Length: 317
Ligand SMILES: [Zn+2]
Image (cartoon, rainbow, N blue to C red; front, top):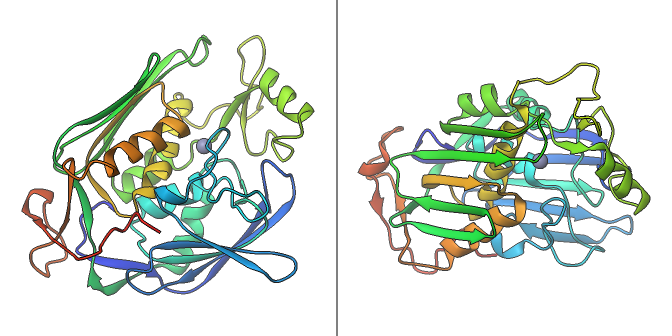
């Protein structure tokens, strides 16, 4: 994990900056990842033009809107939008502590995938800290349903995702991705999958003043006659479900600690991922906080020991 069950917390070795445009505003955005101390968590700091700073820990309790993307904070004047692709990269690479300085109201969309964020992190490298990492181990199933959609956490000896989508669109149809998550699996199988949309929806969003930065450079766009408009085509034949899985990795990162279990979803999305996580975290009988029993670098999930840390709740602000 995150997800290779390394025993110690991490941060990045030195700062790194990315620039791009925001997919919703179309405005230029710059972000800088800074190293952070153990137990700091992932913290976003939005720097306003007047120098004021709004700060959010990347945890479930700070999530505002999830209609079009995942937003931290309730007020548009201070909130930070479209965090899911950045967070997916951070979670999948096993970064526990980071300060993300943001000049703008949302993350840069880059190419619509997580790859540019992975590249930036790998450019500077990941550094281990001298404090043990804690995990959220699922001990009983938690399931939510909404119409035909559902998602659930179940106990599992590792971190596993099983994501299935079904669109009333012959180009996408029914697709599923299943796998145990490690940094290398994420990089190889998911990180390059881009966000996607339908031309008719994009036109409607543009008319309403949304998705102003959306283009063929950062989205796979599907025409009204079910063809991919992008001349370069798809990066994976099932790029759609791979992107949905990437989104789920980013959304579940807001647990504030890596989870040990299996996450399954059928026809889910940001809202369902967020609600499933809330359902899990609001049921203290469904999970326990664990860490490695010995200072070994690697261990198996089943060998981890439960810890009672007074006041410890990585997912709370
Ligand atoms: Zn996405």
